[in-house]
Amino acid sequence: KAVFLALGVRPDGSRDILGLWIEQTEGAKFWLKVFNDLKLRGCEDILIAVTDGLKGMAEALEAVYPRTTLQTCIVHLLRNSLSYAGYKERKGLAEALKPIYQAVSTEAAEAALEAFAEGEWGQRFPTITLSWRRAWEQVIPFFAFPTEVRRVIYTTNAIESLNARVRKIIKTRGHFPTDEAATKLIWLA
Image 1 (cartoon, one colour):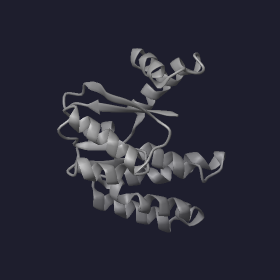
Image 2: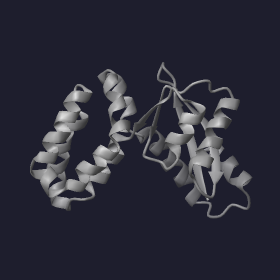
Image 3: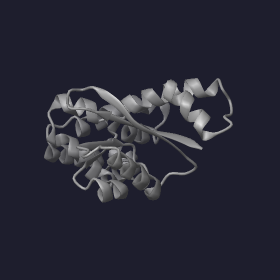
């Protein structure tokens, strides 16, 4: 089973864990259950949902919170892109991708992606260009925000940090007799 956490960031920058779910699998049905649960518990709206391309997330979000902007994690997209290159090539490839996500506007980002595709790196790794284009509708929303906000929404590092703390607590315990036992320990952590 997997543990899923939802982390909310308020306009003032404070953070709240919105919920904890333990499930065998994830998908559109699971995420629909999560968003309905959040709505029933009083989460009226979500401005931006930052995810790492989770299966079924977009459909479930559209059903429960239709006005929510879905933003893919740029860091995950970048890591995925770097996995196509050898270890010695990664630094150069990362530099070549930077103009795309550091662009000042959507138009500038599109031009940078096109330049990457036509350049040396894009010719050597066409799959990277394809993966960015496939995710493009979830890449570009953050260009509508100022730089200060972009720093918060371009990555899922906050939730990943929380997940790392949870893993550290869980791995010392081994197995749990029930989901409730696991939930209690995780919540205490």
